[in-house]
Length: 169
Image (tube, rainbow, N blue to C red; front, top):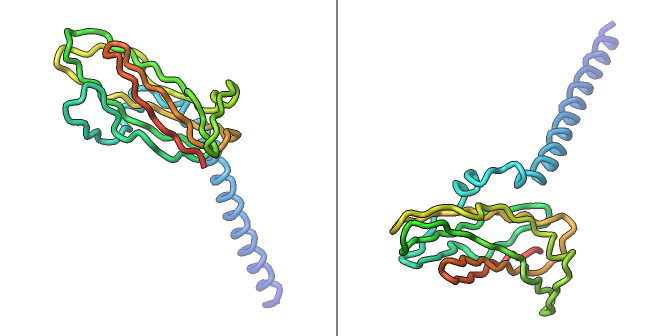
């Protein structure tokens, strides 16, 4: 009788451990799937709050950190600060992936340039002598080419062109 109870207890413990491992596996898979679409669910206000503290001084347009390593399937946020020295007006930001550098060769194929998704506020109003911090979300597709993606950040009101470098290992 004792051996029968021992076998039953061993079986129950094994089932409980198996269910726990199965549950952790499901949680792990759902986390992977959730991270892949995280950029789509963020609002532009949430992106603005996620930017790192910008140390810019008195530059009219400043990108805090202009180079980051972003793995395939992940995303990160860059911060840009714009100071308005003009009258109160609407400012625009235009961002395009201009080229990819891989092994010192330039890739300009349109289908490869589209492997980086961008999310940011494209226009906003800044008061005279005011400033605005804007978050730029960058998501790299899982099938993107490895290399350095060069993003052109243009502020037409100041005729400023800045560069952001996204290194994809």
